[in-house]
Every structure is written in C-alpha cells, then in structure tokens.
Image (cartoon, rainbow, N blue to C red; front, side):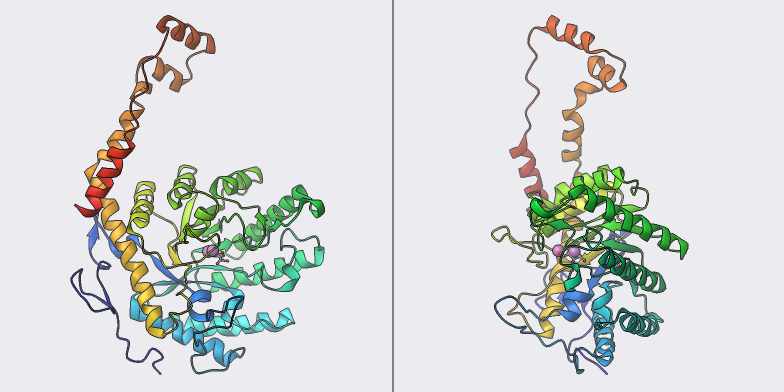
Length: 437
Ligand code: XLS
Ligand code: NI
Ligand code: NI
C-alpha cells in the first residue's frame, strides 16, 4: 500500500527544472573526480526526525501526522513507520538509515518487552531490506529521553542506571549488527552536568569510558567490524556536555585508549553550538584520523540551540566537501539529522526537505571538487609554510636543532622579515569565483 500517494520517485532533472519534486544537482551517476556522486555522498535518513517527530515543541503539540494509518504506540505503527521509511528512501534513492532503539518500537516499562519488540521489528526491517540496496548506516541507543537518564547514562550516579544503559547499548549493538550497520554512535546527550556542586567529573568521565570499552568488547565479540563513533555536542540538553567538540572528544578517546575503535560523527549544528565552524570540527577530526561520519544539518546562527535544519547553504556544504575530499572520504555517510520546520507539516515537505539537503550537498561536492582542481587555495596554503622547507626551517622540522642554535640564528638576523600576507580577502574571492563564476 502506497503511503506517500501521488509523490513519484524523485529524478534528476537538472538546474533549470522548476519541478519541486526533482533533483536539480544530485545526479547519482555523475562522476566527480572519477567517482559517482552516490559514492561520494552516502546519504542516510534519520529515523527519528523523519518518521517519528511531529513538530512538538515546548509551546505546543505536533503539527505533522506521522501515524501512517496506524495507532501510535503500537507494533502496527512501528511496522507502518518502517513501511513509510522504505517507501520514502526508495522514492528518493536514499541508501542508508540511522536509528535509535526507541525510534523503531514503543518503549515499554519492562525492558524485556522492549527488547522482544526490537527483535520483531528488526526481522521486519530485514525483510524490507531484502531486494533493495538500502542498508543501515548506524544505530544507537537513546540514553537521554527516559527519566532514568536524568543524570546521564554512562555518567549516571546510579549503578543500576549504568546497567540499564549497558543493556540498551548491548541490544542496540545486536540490532545494528543484525541490520548490517556500518557504525555505532554514542551521542552523550545527558553525559555532562548542570552544576559542579553535585558532580564528580573525573568519576563520570571514567565511567563513560568504561561503558564504551564494554561496548567495544561486546561489539567485536558478536562480529561488529565497523566504527564506533562519538558525536560531539557542547550543550543541550545538559548545560555542559563532556563531548564538547571534536578536539575534546579526540583527547578523551586517546586518554582512555578508545582511539583505535572510535571515530567521530560530526554534526554541523553541534560544531556551531561549540563556537566553531562546521569546517573546523571536520578538519580537527580529519587531521587526527578520526573523521568517520557526518550528521548533515545546519543550525541558525541567530538561535542558540540545535535547530536541526536541512542544509541549504552551498557555502557551508562546499567547505564541508572540501574537507571530506581532502581527507579521502568518510567511512560512514551523511545522515540528515534534520527536520522540517513545524509549519512545513505535509508529506510533500518531507520530500522537499531531502531534495534541498541532497541538492545542497551535491552542489557543495561539485564546487569543492572545482576548488580542489583549481588548486589556488591548496597551493597558497602550501606556499605559506615554505620557509620550513629549507634552511633553518627544515632543521626545525627535522628536530635536528637546539634552542640555542635557533636563538643564535635570530640574534644574527637582528629582526625578521614580516611573515607574509595571509591574503584572506583574496582567498575569499577565489571561493566566490568558483561558487558563482
Ligand atoms: C542530538 C543528536 C542526536 C544524535 C543521535 O542533538 O544530534 O540526534 O545524532 O543520538
Ligand atoms: Ni546528530
Ligand atoms: Ni543534534
């Protein structure tokens, strides 16, 4: 039974098309730097925003009907959501999905009942996957909504709650492996604190690392070969979250010996909440060999929270794809952790939103490839450090020098030449020329 009645499979029609239900830039088979767009851009649907969220906010109930013909809170509804999700992904040519355990099924007060429901729905989803090219990008456990997690999951002060977190991670890993997931995400929504007056930070961080180690051990024991990911975010829901940003998460993973099994899942809106650009957190991840996956959305710089909007800025997706191309691509993919605005409540809006996101990333990819091929930016950066390629600079790089020798060198020079213009305005105009020229 068709759920999205009257909405056809979305096709590439090119930049001149005025058909709202067509791609203007995302042309799956088009080769960019020798590789088809579909391989550069493994897009994923976030189960929670697309199939569960109705637009509820603290001022009012949802505006969108996501019952899909079934009664919410039932297994019939869980199956209807899966039906809707697969029809949706197939119509858009999306090949991956991401989920939290409780996106898939209604959570019961007895975790045994919830787990049995997860077994049932994952059988159902596996059946739906057969005969399609749709796969699971990553799974995760929701360890932030249930009141038991009010003080965190791995970071909870309650050992019993820690065990419930362990149970949810175990089950979510089981389901992720069953569905062939490429990754497993930890987003520490409530792994943080409201006040240091009641919090032992060291204790909490050690326990989070313990939970992650236990997850790795279990995951590897059941044949999970993919990456674990931390998804950094500085705040919201907690005032301060331990996985503040990419740099903080890299340090944490190294400190606790988790860096071989973990990479990062960088979300655009989280990076900007941390006071960085999206590009910054991508670069920090990439230079540490930890750029794993991306939550593709955007925030609103005028608002201080996680608005999870569909990406529309070609400037930002170009910078994102510039980082991704130069890092050699993702082991994960581009998960649209994004939702339509509350007044965009129709099924058609869900399609418009994905078309916007996919086209914005496709255009970003095209422009980033053009920036790479143009070469002026990379050449400028390389040249900027040229003084380290020979002479005293090369000695510094090779470690073949003492502080005194450098001092002597400086003293004989008396005063150095200025270090060369940063040329920011010129470089920004190069980017504009590539984007709009
Ligand atoms: C919330 C996070 C969340 C994770 C998965 O801000 O982005 O949706 O991606 O738990
Ligand atoms: Ni996210
Ligand atoms: Ni988020």
